[in-house]
Image 1 (cartoon, one colour):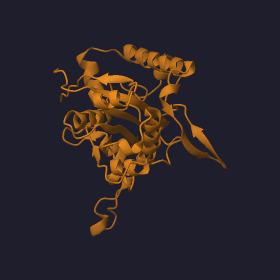
Image 2 (cartoon, rainbow, N blue to C red; image 1 turned 90 degrees about the vertical axis):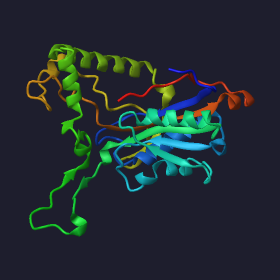
Image 3 (tube, rainbow, N blue to C red; image 1 turned 30 degrees about the vertical axis):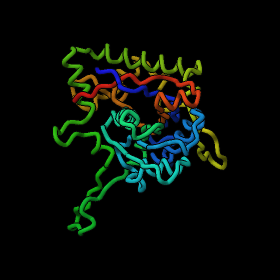
Image 4 (cartoon, rainbow, N blue to C red; image 1 turned 135 degrees about the vertical axis):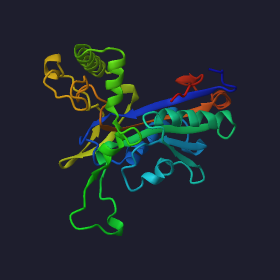
Length: 286
């Protein structure tokens, strides 16, 4: 990995708490969540929104009517000037990382001094689709397609995403006991970190309606701290009859967003800023 020709720094990094599938954030679009977290990241960076030169966000499954304008609307709704461009990128699970890379590249190329980058998804809002309805459907042939389930299956290979995990388990000879033990340990570690408040500094509030009041959503709800090995043994295998992947070992389906403010070394020095981190490089494979 080559060293970068210029210094690029992370000034701030914020995220929403992650909502469970159909949970507290189900009525918030991916754009809504990205706006909340962008405003928080800008506030923490100490940078005026007018200083941002480019807005770049990762978004994979476009689940809302405004998704086609995602990064553009994030910028406008976050108070960034109308003339600042927005770019939405999709590298599947790496889309948020790709947005960071693109933001750093803008700085390295001299096209920007400050970039707002991040990623956002609302899997809960994935719609059901009736294909062909625009041109008319034959009697009895109006099937509903679940766009969420469709997107989690690679149509080129015909494999669901979780089959990647099954293939890796087979390649590295992972037993069911090992997979279950790792799942439980992961939940325990997350619960301990959550309880200790270690995540608090990175979280931003999302206002949600609960009955007749508006409350701040600031605690991850996708995790399952009550998970036990005994409980996991009762779960059915979803993707392969004799496999090791069940609901507790598969990738989560949830809602949330994150945002970072990046800046050049010259901008940081000129404004006397104290960055969180320095970007030294990256790699892409596959």
